[in-house]
Amino acid sequence: MKRTVYFPEIFEMIGNVETEEEKIAILHRFYQEKGFCDILFLCYDPRVEWIVTREEIENLRYDDMDIADYDLAPSTLFLEARRRLYNCTNIRQGGKPPLQKNKVIKYIARMFSSLYYKEVELFKQMVDGDIQDIGLNEDLVRKAFPGLLSPAIPRKPGRPSGAKNKATIEKEEKYGIPEKRPAGRPVGAKNKKKPAVKKKAATKRKAPAKTPVKKVEDVEKVADKPDTDGV
Image 1 (cartoon, rainbow, N blue to C red):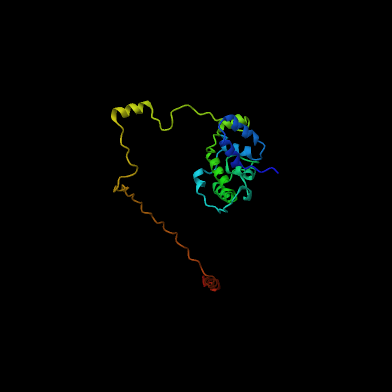
Image 2 (image 1 turned 90 degrees about the vertical axis):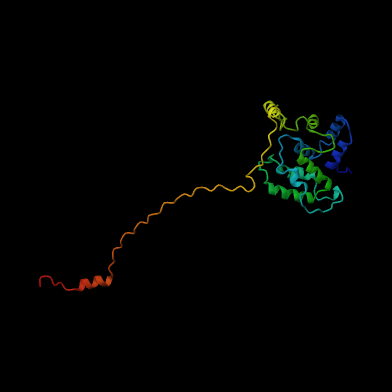
């Protein structure tokens, strides 16, 4: 009976060989394993963006079942990669939108509680975009499977992040590096009081005089009164 080979074991095999040819041969050997190419795609495709970061799930609290081996785990990354892992990224599956971050974190906590600890660590490295200590990278995956990943995103040439331009360097050499002022008001500084705005006195309008309303009894008395004109 063929023994199931789990994803962390495959990547350990890749890490145990040195040449690119040997690593590619192992990748080709397990190409037909369901979910394996999904793992490579989610880890190395330049279009994939995870909704969570490694820092957000590094110390995530979950029910640790202290699973002793792969075969005793209720779930595996093989199953999760085929069912739900794409929902944790910006890649849509079946037209469904990605999950919200709070739902993704809850899902990952439930998933961690049902995985063997080595698969938990592998998933964290996937979110980081780099499976460590195996000598595998995006270029090598493209050589092994030319049509698996999206086209590489070209990087624009320019200064490294934080590098200073020539004019800034010359100014600092001539005048020295200015001291950075701390942000915010100095300690003890008071707020400037805004001038008080005088409010116009509101003029009250007089209510119209109310016309007296005759009672029904008064109207009847006037009607009953005899007419004395001309007598």
